Image 1 (cartoon, rainbow, N blue to C red):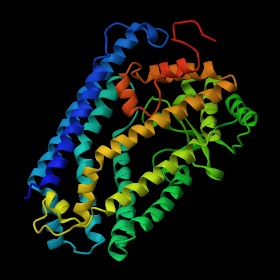
Image 2 (cartoon, rainbow, N blue to C red):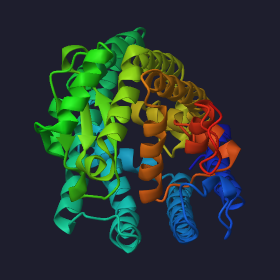
Image 3 (tube, one colour):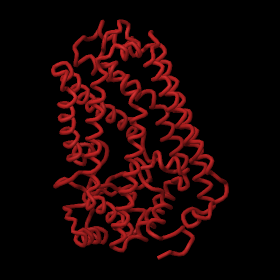
Length: 422
């Protein structure tokens, strides 16, 4: 094992990443209190707030244990040169094919990562979520989801890495540009057909039945000039009591999906407000804008990666016995080195995403749904025991949505227990 400068840079990045996650967790803990904050009086009562704080503490402990375990395993693998050893073993006993080798390597890593996470996911679902009354998942569904998620990840990974590997050896000078085009096409297709291809693997989607709610939603679509063929109901209750709604696809394939738990928990007006918010995202073209940003980032990442893949220094840093340039070890080393930049870019994305959420809220407010939207979000938040007072640094760094209190303030509704400022 050759402990060069790149190796130590990777070690520092891994350790600092772990430390920064714990700092953020500590900042959130500093905001915790046994006394109900006045601004939450209209959302939680004292008993529910105490329950939310307990839920947050337990999840925080599990997160610390899980993160410590995974970081320790990763550091051990790095110091032992296990990645280089695995590649050498596969070359000796499985394949030397330049496309198949990285696929087999990453498939093994993906399976091991899934196995590593499994006990923590199981505990979270069947102990913590069960204890607080959220879990509706059976063990059969849980393990079925894990298996389907693993297979889906293997397929996506095979396409991505397979394209990169093939082009890297066939057209080394321009592989990143062609790979960018191919992967962009693939991501657009997935986004276009997401509701028809991916969602059915995990959930049933049924058209919203005739009735008051359907009539109200279609009336809203006419008022906002947002043509929809149907609204679909997701059977989220077979896994959790937590509610959700989302807008998927674009063009003729755009689809509004409501979780059945959302329909059970909110009034017709509140659900219409949620739909008005989602329509706001469409009207403001948030989906194509965010997609364009992600495509640009992918191109930048592929270009940057192309500058490093031929380096023997990267291969040595991950334990290559020969020190010869290696596509798979180069990809892996680059993925570690790219983390700090990726973190900064994600912060920028989160800032833009929160801006988009404010715009979608404002759109709903223009149609008279400001109060129903916030009332619906209060219900969703309180039932899910959401932390409504996270530290501002954590919100800035990791939140893709503003907090409920921030959204209420932006709409001029004030604190839950205060009179409206309109």
